Each structure stands twice: as C-alpha cells, then as structure tokens.
Length: 336
Image (cartoon, rainbow, N blue to C red; front, side, top):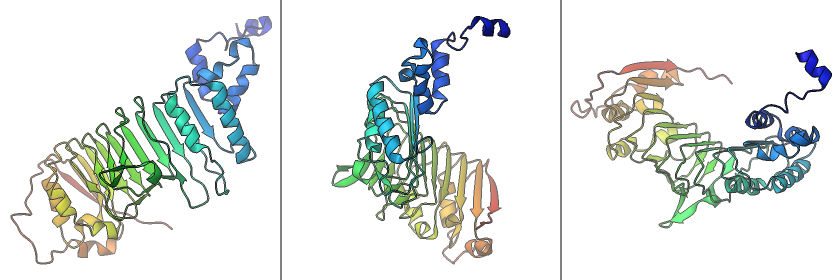
C-alpha cells in the first residue's frame, strides 16, 4: 500500500486530522513549523493555529538580533489566536541585553490566554532579566521562571512590595530558579506547588502566603529564610537552608502556624538539628501524620555535635506523636 501511495502521489500527512497535524508542528522548532507553509496549500498558515510555541534563541540563528526580528515578525503574523503553552528559552549569549523584547513576548502570551508559561533567560552575564509585565490572566495555571528579577513587576500593598498572584485565580504551579526575589510578600490563594531554588531572597524575610499549597521546595537560596504562613493542606516539603538562614527563629515561626494536618513526606538538611533538637521536635509537633522524614547531612563530621543537647532541654515541650513516622538519615558527599 505504501508503494501504491508513492506512485499515486498521495499526501498521507496532509490527510491526517487537523489536531494531529497541529501536534506534529508543535514538536518542531518554530522556524521549521513556519516553513511548513511552503509544503502545499493545505499547510499554508497552519502553524498559526499551533497550541504551543517554543522560542529558543540562537538555536538556528547566528545572532540574537536575527532571532529577535524573527520572533517579533512571527507574533504579528500569528495574531491573537489562543495558546496553550508558551516557552522562551534564551540562554546562549554573552551580550549585556541580547533579548530586549522578552517582556513584550510574555505580554503577547498572556493576551493569547496561555495556560503554561515558561521563561528561561539564563545568560552568561550576571544580571537577571527584569520582569515588568503584570502577571494577570484568568487562564494561567503554570509559571516557570529561570534568571528573572521580580522586583519591578511587584506592587505596593500596605507600603510593602508584594508579588501578588490574585490576578491569576487558576494558578496551580510556580517555579522560580536562580531568580531575584526582593519582595516583602508572595501570595496566591490557588497555588498548590511552589518551588524556589538557587534564588536571591530579601534580607528582611519574605512572607509566603499560599493557603492551598500541597507541595513546597525551598532550597539553596541566599538571603533570609522566608516566613511561611498557614499551609494546612501541605503534603510534601523539601527545605534546605544554609547556615545563616538556619539561624532564624524557626521555632517561633512554627509556633504561630497551625498543624500541618496533611504533611506526609518531609526532607530537611542539618539546620533543623543545629545546636540541639528543638527545631526538629517543633516541626514534628506540627506534623501528626508525617510518614517519612529524611535528614540530609552535608557535613558528617558535624553530625555528633549537631545532635547534642546544650542544657535547655524541656522533656514536656519536647514530646510529639507521629505513630507512622520513619526517619532516614543520609550523609551527602559534595563533589567539586
């Protein structure tokens, strides 16, 4: 049958259902998807209806300037047709400001009612791309950021800088990696998954208000450890603080929080047993159904001293009940 189709000149791909062809186009680099218009009349302009766009700088362009011109021309031709996913990945340039239109492209995606927005602007230079576009969308469910500075897109609320996602009522997942987050508060009533890694936090302790949060990862950040408000639905958490962040009064923070009634999995590093077991016990007192606790020790020589009691032990305050708890201690070897 394949030979017969080849002889008759049948175009099997063009005969596929529209949604299948759009998915095929979405798998291609956007430059190749645009070129598909040259195949035949059936393919002309079909790329404009793709449910997702992936813009990768310098993947098939010699310069950032050429890539910028292409993307700006592309969004003009495409118009405001709906988008499901939109990804910007511009990582490979040593120019101080190689992609000045990133905020324009993000705004375009929001206008197109994008559901999943990913922005990776990891450049060789130290400065992060400054996000200036207000993040407001009734359809947005997922945000992924790398090397983004959020200070200019935050708003003043009660004289404090706030990264407020109330304008995204369906937002479920927020990931911030290698970002600059010099704000006083991060808030979202709908957020269920929050990941903040290798980022710069405010030196005046950022408050995080996410009452619907189910999963939390906070690790390898600089600046003061944030203050976590009520998270009664939290089920899993990974918290890795450095020594300076661990010096914060975590026990006082936890004492102000309600019980983590749904938390079953927790991973911590040695900050929770530094200078005694008080912090760890305080966490366990607020996690009655915890099933798995993993302690990561990056400095195994310091483990015995970290587990010592320094004379301020109160046996009544140190009691807790976690009948299903299993504890696992893991020494971690750092390889330079």
